[in-house]
Length: 418
Image (cartoon, rainbow, N blue to C red; front, side, top):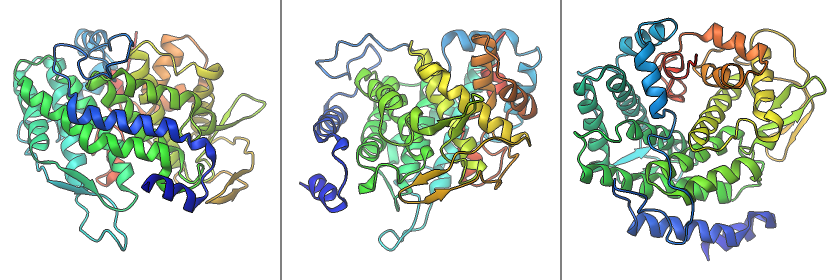
């Protein structure tokens, strides 16, 4: 009843698809309660699913990727990426996790408790960096440190709280946490029961917020939220699906990317393709920092799907590449066309925003290496941005606030292809 009241009050369009929403929520809640998978197989998938088993490790880094990194770590440009990882204070055996029972992001008149979400994004950055350092070096001490961090949080975290910004926390930190855990898959030092507890945390704490947001958008109009809000929750939904062997969750994220109504679906994120082939990014009239954030999130979604055999990079005639080229060209200091953009909540944008222009984020290596190296396509502006940003660092290398931890990073080390 609460869902129906919310929709009627806000006069939401019928395209919310209430039946689909109900099935999504009921299946995910039931799975979170009863179907946490063990490490023997896809026991957590819905009973009626006939989807092929998911590939592991199968998020941002597959087994072939990890082998390639190990084989090339002493060669350029991998070496410079490795040096960025080793120099980052989060990739340290001295790192001490600081778990919390409740993580708060965002305050309003109903949510007045102090924000503490930096505890979570710092610890995730450390778990990922240490896990990656173990995968490359083979030094089990770093795996043990990553496990220490993951276990500390899965033993303590009970819920996420705050204003509507809690949806950003569930999305960004959900997909990053799942990636950190996937790196540790197969490590003998991470007990099976501890892995199961971590998966349960992801299913019970992060997933429900991801799915509710993508289905309801907090009762607002479908175009109210910027692309990055959708994208981070899509990324979390996808990553949790893979981590927990839930093909149904993974497929929900893939379907939303291709056919969703919100601004994170590729048709809305790249909201206009100009005659010259450049794809205008949905947040371009807002600022460049959030446009870059969107490139990073969509790139990670596409790569995680690629590992599972789905080509989202190439969907709709490489629409994402058109968006990458648009954002890259403008942030390299060149001019781009701009089509007026109308948004029911944020008004009309008649010109691109220069705010944050030229900012660097660790988002370009992945898309450059896919489109140019892996696929052999021309992407001159993406190529130049990748060269400018190289070598890419990780959490904390781009500032100490939340924006400096929006991306896992280290793309020069992990995404460079031959």
